[in-house]
Amino acid sequence: MIKDETVRTLSSGQMAWYRFKYNPSALIGVFIIISVIIGAIFAPWLAPSPESAGAHVDFLNRHSPPSGVYLMGTDNVGRDIFSRVLFGYRVSLGLVVGVLGIAVPFGVLLGLTAAYAGGWTEWVIMRFTDVMLAIPPLAMALAVTAVLSPNLVNAMIAITLLWWTWHTRLIYRIAKGQMAEDYVEAAKVSGASHVHILLRELLPNCISAIAVKTSLDAGFVILFGAALSFLGLGVQPPTPDLGTMVSTGSEYLPEYWWEALMPGFAILYVILGFNLLGDGLRDMMDVEL
Image (cartoon, rainbow, N blue to C red; front, side, top):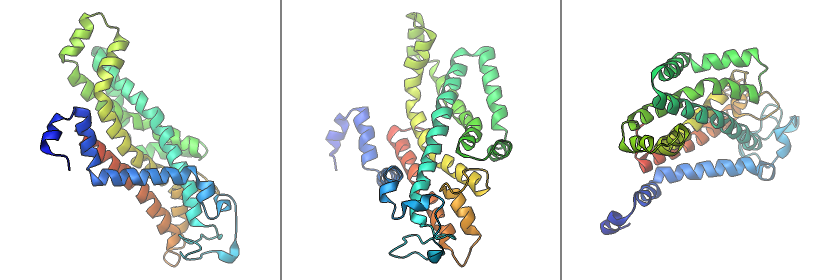
């Protein structure tokens, strides 16, 4: 443990890292996420049965319970569930990167623009955001994926259409409060461009909130994608997807419980990791969302 005298001499960045390093739940979250990423990247080599990720059948071993040979058992056509979970993490993480990679920058840009521009620009952006927030996300996603063919790309589109709104509201609130600060007025007086003020003055003060919000959102995106797949409007078989695996396995409950329960635990595992990381970042950066 660091002595009190040493703690008082640390910079704000060092203090933040100190709070994160000695936060057990945050470290557990980091471990979980790293394990999921490693499992997804190296799935072809870590999976006991890589062929189970495709249209593979092994009727002699169908409905096999968890054992030393099949850690999570096998499904209704004899595919190894553990192998499919590892490949399913690829789909889940790809969904996170695709959705948040678009929604976060777009939402942040709109929030900064509304707070900085004010007037009619602020009114139009925020009222449009309010309208989009009033639409139930799952209903919108179901409508989009029902009209378009169900696949990973269309699932990303469906989720992204509404996900930017929360980031817009968050960044708008933070940036609006920063507009009255002296450093913004100083930048205006010095002749700084609008782009400079947005990206070099306001944005850095929102980074902490963006990092925390994004890490928490990652778990919700995975859950949302799994819900779409569970309803048959997400990733389609034989591509391994955690939501689809839960849906298929639920048809054989309670006799073959592992076929639904094990993919469900896999979803819980990765969501828990992102939530613990988000809480750790929030404590580290002292952010209120």
